[in-house]
Image (cartoon, helix red, strand yellow):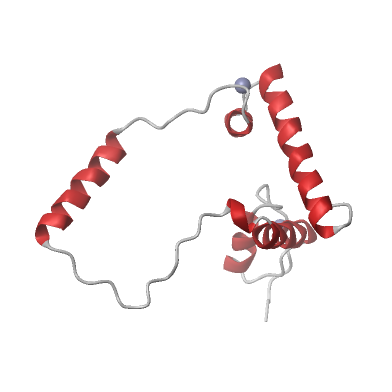
Length: 131
Ligand SMILES: [Zn+2]
Ligand SMILES: [Zn+2]
């Protein structure tokens, strides 16, 4: 039973915000509850957008030392690779501008508007109500 009164944080309205409420043993705020409901709705309705990885029925067999060395080398190579930066004119680039507090250029603003419009239309069509 939550013992602490709800705190509103900068991360509220995101999955991280919800996790922070849970970590602090408090009731989630309404913004976080709405975001979570929306997230679950999208996960249910837009299932085809989420890559499916079936759970193996058998426990995974132990890997050989050679395979372990190959896995480690692949991981290390990926860690050294500089992170891919999304090109302007995409929703990912718009998110990057937001995160870094950068100015939003017209191409990214248009991409973000189009993304939200498409997502909302899809949700409205699938639920039969305004989302
Ligand atoms: Zn919250
Ligand atoms: Zn941009």
